[in-house]
Length: 302
Image (cartoon, rainbow, N blue to C red):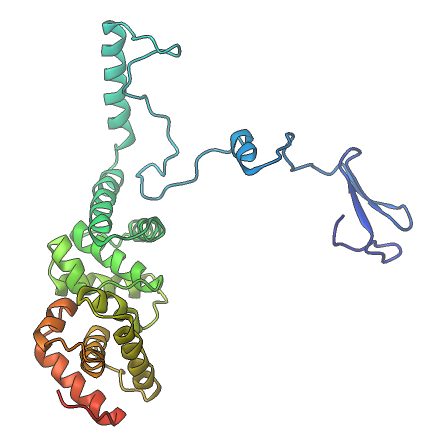
């Protein structure tokens, strides 16, 4: 049954009759629409396994692949449909076909750029342990950069790192510029410059990073308990409520909160240990610690 209304009597009892290809009112019998298309599958399934086997849809688009995965490839097995090995003459022919197919699929400079960039993107994402959803979103954003001609005159690696940084922030899974710099081999300043340029040119709506998103990573690296993590997040919530993080680097504020919380829960860590994990200086932690202690009225000796 459809959720529409009958134009004649206003009844909501509207029936889709796929056998006749009609939409009929169940109250007055008027034919509302005819020759409708049946978009349902012509097969039946009784469980999820059957549904998966009988569905004939193609593979989904993969932005992480230069051709989006929509290409026919000649496999490397060198066997025919029955599994028997093919002759050496045929193998040589297939080898040539594979070689020219690969060359033809990466013909233009844009395609070559994309092939290099996506392999670099996959490498960085693997080192950072990023999920497939972040990789696909980052690849799509990089394609937008190519379409808008933002790559020209810039290092591919710096744009890739900037795209990953932006995507992680948009998806609430932030990574620091320090981490990206270490993995990509590009200076933080260069990544930051590329990120700001892409954000401005593509008008990306990237929210401010919440410092509390860094807390679980820092506490895990420092082998601190869940109690410390919870305490640090509470401190940051109070600081955000009082507007104390405005104009401050989120990693520095998060590191200071973890440092304070570790002392409050008797799991003290030194400023150097916290600074090394957060990728900030000890001076930054000291400055943020003093601000938080003063504004939040914390009575703790460190």
